[in-house]
Structures are given as structure tokens and as C-alpha cells.
Length: 405
Image 1: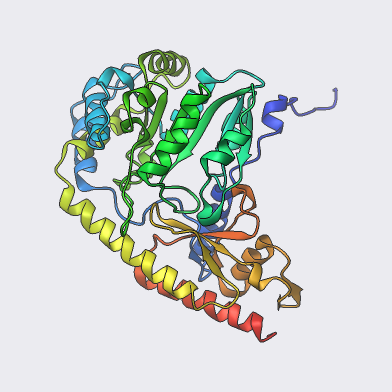
Image 2: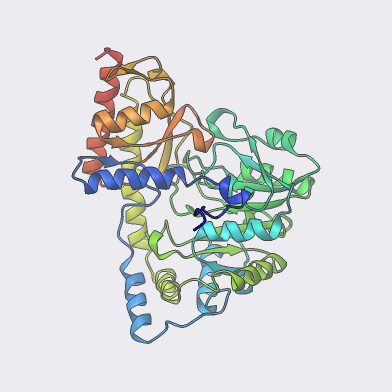
């Protein structure tokens, strides 16, 4: 018999690594499952239960047999509810401009696929979410990182300087993953004006729109002006706000030609998201959850403040930017470089994260894949007791480093 060989992978597949954040989260969860006393600060989801209204709507959908294919763009009631949800921020979306997808990540994938040609360029403010450049690369286009200024925010001048004749899309993300920074309305307007001046499409990832704290306020890019709305695709979903990450319901809201193209693409890929999950999302979006969601936001804000204060007392660590949104922050760990733990010298954020996990049983994400190579990303969503424990461990770990222990 001839020797068996593995199928040859397409170049696009060979060039796409697994998600670093998903891999680290899986590693931390595996350690916990094995009995290790690990506190996992890598997670990209709020540590709250799915809102009961969503679960109840899902059970009802199952009992009533709503388990068949839905329209490719999603059930009409959910498209309208998602439009209403977005329009509370001042946008003017019609339900026909909404496409329901299997999570915001799929909405991004479909959007890039219908907008980009091989060789096109996407202007990508750094630091950025780990999946953005890979989703862009799958289309044959290229991500062009735009380096931030003070406070981990890019300036209009930096974006303008990165524009070439191949630039097609400006990707914005506020509140931002991984930094937690929130761009003001004026800052977003100035960035959007660059897109107008250079005829770029804006893809605005607004999945964390609910999670804004302190004096910061959320602005939807498509609400800035009708002219900007005409060139903007808004990405969102129920995952973060309603603690429905596993239900996999997101959306792309876009001018009709883009929405129609995304719908056509989806009709040939997933057909549509799960009918049960769509009804669950409808239950969440149409319930009056203002009090519950505000309580959750207040609680997460409290965890945020606890984290920022505690890290301020950890030698060698500095919180970068103003983490006023989402549920992440970036901590600069260059102050620990040159220190040792367990006979190993820290020379990178990856070293820091590895030693923190093996010596202190705390999992964080090194920032290289976020274009923040000297930082680690910390998610502060875990319950307060666990969070305080993890922060105490981080402080003890860094204090031991500074004493050479």
C-alpha cells in the first residue's frame, strides 16, 4: 500500500494560527479541571449568567418547535429588535439593514469577505484584538497596523499617514479589546473624517457598547452623521451585554448593498444562525432589563477599580491608557524585565505570563498578538473574591521578583 500522507493545506489555512486568547483560556481551564488552584484572568466574557429572559425564550422556542431553518438574514423580529437596540445610540438603522450572524466574529468575517479584494489594505489601530489581522488575511487583504499615541489611542494624523492607494477599510473598536480604552465622540468624529476624506469604509466593532464606566460615554460611529453612516458597518451582538457568549448571536448593520451581500454569503455558508439562539436573543433584547444590566455594569466597574488600584501597588507593573470600557486592561510589565523567578530571567511579557502561571497560578495573556509586546492583558470579570486573590498573587509575585527571590 502507498504511504499515507496528510492532505495538503491551502496556503491561507497554513498561515492562520489558532487564537492565542482561546488557547490560553483553554489551558487555564484544563489546569483548573485537573485540580490546580489557577485563577483565570484570560477570559473574554463577563462572569455573569445568561439573563433568564433569554433562557426562557429558548425553552419556549424548543417546546413550540421553532427548530427549523430561518431566513438567511435572521428572523424578522430579531432583526427589528437588533435595529431598535442599536438605534438607542442615535443611529437610524432599518431592520432590512441588519444581518444576524453566528456571533460578532462571523459578522466580521462576512463583512471583510464582501468588502475586500486581495491586495487591499485595512487600517488597523493598535493595540488590536488578536483575530482582526487573521480575519483580514483570509480575504487576501492585508492589515496595516497604526501605532497609538499616548493613552493607547491612535490619532487622525497617524491614520492619515498610513493611507495608501490600496487602503479600503478603517477598522475602529471602542470600547477596545484589549486595552479597555473608550474613544470620545470628538475623537471618533476626527477618525471618521479621515475615512470620508479618503473614501474608506468604516467597520466599527461595538460589541462592548454596554460596558462603559466612570466619566466615559459610548458613541456609535454610525450616529455621528448621515454621511458617515453611509460608509459604516456596525458590528455587535448579545454576547457581552447579556452574557450570551456561547449562544453565538451577533450582527452586522450596514447600508443595504453590504447587508444584502452579507446575507447572500451567509446563505451559502451557515444558512443562518441557530433558530433557538435567535429566539433567545430576541427574548433578551425585548425584555426590560435596564435595572439588571445597570447592576451588572456597576459590579463590573467595581471590579475594574479594584484591579487598577491593586496593580498600582504591584512593583514593575503599570496600567497603560485609561481602561474605561469593556472588561480588559493592558498592564505594561517592562518594569519586571531583568528580574528572576525560579532561576529564569524575565525578558518579555511572554516570560512574565508564563512565570506568573507556573509560580503564582494566575493566567493572563501576553500582548504580542495584540500588537502590545510589552504588556499583558488582564480580564477582571471573575467574581470579586477570586479577583482579589489573583491580584494578591500578582503583587506577591512581583514583590518577590524585585527582592531577587
